[in-house]
Length: 81
Image 1: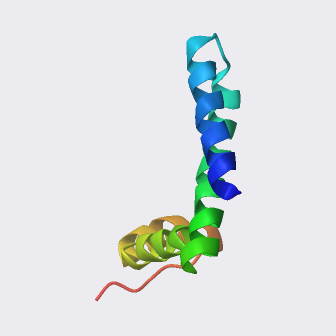
Image 2: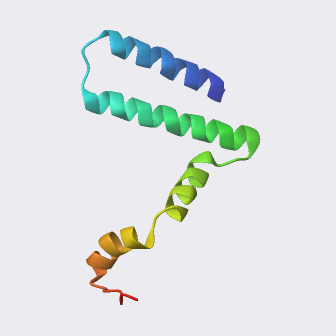
């Protein structure tokens, strides 16, 4: 059943590309398609690719970047060594 949903979404996206459309609607359709693919992979293979990608992205974030974003928001200053 999820395969049919994904096929319908792809067909609908193709029809949207042939007609004038708003960027917001296209973005929403792409997000829905990505979510449907994620749900299908989760149900079919018992994997969670979106979660794995987010975790990898967080693991690669540097301490300097944290200081610039979260540290600034919290008002925390790190001692320089």
